[in-house]
Image (tube, rainbow, N blue to C red):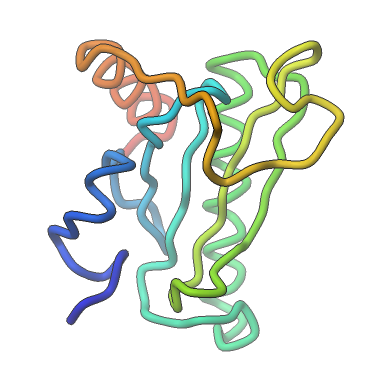
Length: 140
């Protein structure tokens, strides 16, 4: 199909994030760059470009997934604020960036940069621990 989120194995996606699991209306991914500890993205399960293309049921379900995922991230890693953004000028698939911000931490009180100039990469075991914690907290 050639879609970053719809393709089961997208090399481009797998280069920057790891699948956490399927939620009600979308799939949760953990970013490999953890400059914002717990940063994830939630992609809608159906191939739509805009939130207004969803019917009421799908829109409510994806927003419930966003709320559940952000609540889990905040509980697990104790961020000060969860920022949520829907970007996608060149990626025509609805997805939400879930960005934890920590007071006194990277970019707190300022904007959010999609690609960090100084990414923070973890050991494989640390990613697996984070994924396991998210799955457990979300029941997925």
